[in-house]
Length: 113
Image 1 (cartoon, rainbow, N blue to C red):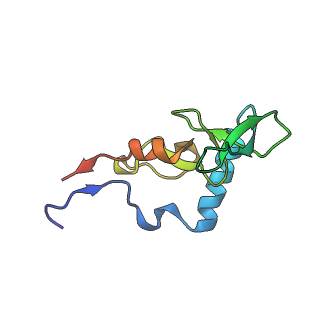
Image 2: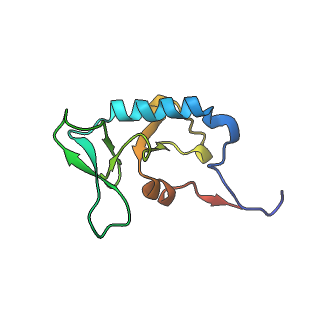
Image 3: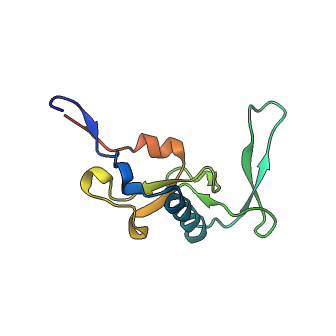
């Protein structure tokens, strides 16, 4: 593929199975657990549900995005590699951290020609 720009973040089967990915998200929630728990909340004018903080032990387990600090649950947390895939980074537990989808897409691998 000469002349095609590729991002170093497409790694095919390197991410593993859906079970592997779910285990990584559970690991992130447990390892980086927030000082509060989460609860779903909707305002009358919102277009969806938001996670809001509740005292620990009264809601579901959450962690925070390492960049913006937003609360994330098992469905909203994404796995960010500390050393990016385009630089040889893997999905080992020593190389991952919790991130929201927005921050993760903003810090994606650089485009190479």
